[in-house]
Length: 365
Image (cartoon, rainbow, N blue to C red):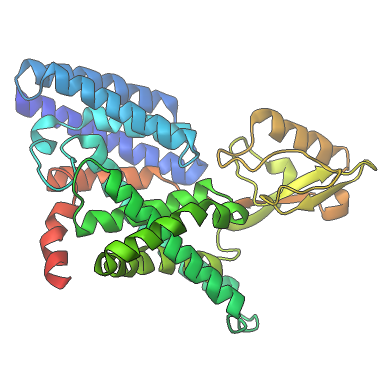
């Protein structure tokens, strides 16, 4: 009976994951019927495994709550689409307990959603850096070389790195469990990703200011620990920051006709209406448009249906002809394939793949 339920769960997981990956890559959408089937089948499979003694009602409720909370949190902050959130929730519920429970380690990853998220986001971030490097280098091809960094630029980089070390120290101190080397590095990567997505670059300096004081406190009390964390931050924050700023200009931005805008598209520039009635483009995140009225904000969740329709109406009326009727938007990477890869890694390692790498990393460190 257990083998039959496990086989059916795995078959549905792989079939739905492959199809969702195809539609996400091809059409940039994930059909609701597949995600709802996964969620319903996941709830049913958890009940069956509970009856067979492989899980408990308490663990099922915790699993259900953790998966739902993580899916909603990442959607609310614009880190993935509603389709990705529902797909993640369904996969988390459908993972067979006999294959993914029982893992121990420095991080409480015995619940499938945590392991699935780590196994999906780490390859996603590595791929993101690789594409940023390749596309950024191609985008800059044929242009003049960059000028040497100024003194002000060097000070700004040191300021951000030092403050980010303070931020990481503060997070680690408040966590109720101990984080090993590998998990500290994952925390830094996650922190970098969230900082870049949630805090506009024009406000990052002010946001990091309090953590500069925290960094000073830790330097005074734990200089060696600060140096070790600084080295991790340099690799986990400094290098990605350099990629996205120095090489990533234009790497994930594309100008498309406004008439082709879709709901959820994230603009990389803004449009404001002057008092004279004319429209012009502006840089998002500056917050200073004078007397001009912005047509949309800089939400990472993208354009709403109403905003997209209004932009198309104005474009059709010829109001945007002065700047060509185009708008720069962020190019997003399909996340469903990463969730499929995360599912395979979770099943293969019985949890997060980091457990198999920790001994190797400790030996190298």
